[in-house]
Image 1: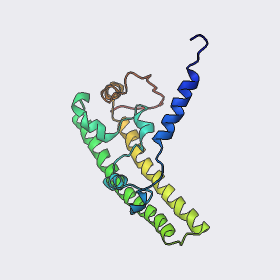
Image 2: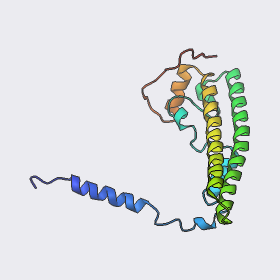
Image 3: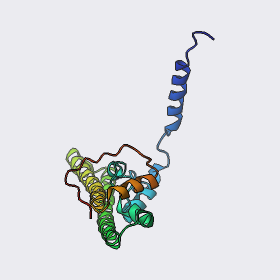
Image 4: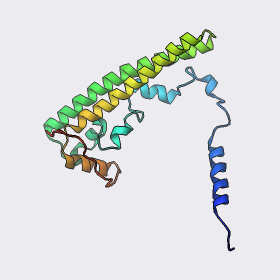
Length: 182
């Protein structure tokens, strides 16, 4: 089999896999009350959960308060760290629940404008901008909690956290002038 290249076979398999992974249609979505949100997404938004909004922080050594509380014993958090982290988490959760409800309402308004055939170009712009702004605000809430949480931890606690979460010994990027630890 001299001169045989695996590249064409690999490419064909890759494209076939990608095509098979895509849904053929949005069949079933038409029964959703809000077409752009699944019932699971609505539940997550109502509960104030992260929904991967803070991955930029989480995967760059900025732990979230919820996960810190879960592994607080392994991190040997002081009583002060534990109390401060609990406070951050409660504020984040309260704000995220409120913002999540607002985002659901914005998506409902957008959905209703289309379902009632009332959407105009001007209305479309306003409705989409509103939903996008709310989604961005929700993401900011989660990212801000990660930022605030990190300031409570020592570099060793962050490294332990990353290891416990399965992030391995990724290169540490401590680029934060003035980063203080309590």
